[in-house]
Image: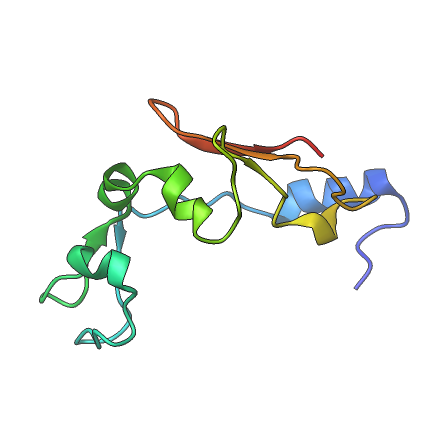
Length: 112
């Protein structure tokens, strides 16, 4: 559904209608009991008997971002690999343009 005739009009519509939401401090599993077969092994220790509540922040701090992303993206020793979101790039991703940074400020960046 078009929301405006120009880019400016579309941006104005977005600013008027889209609201920022707060990310919850805890993840709540939507069922009364946790079916452990559905919980990935690397997350099993963060699911508890009280309905599956766990801290997102605790999970993130307990895992190495390079290792977690490295499960899905082939990374070299510097954390560089091919961007997993290449379908969103205008010209594709012909060279490795994705880098994952660990340490005190864990994050990833795509240079494309």
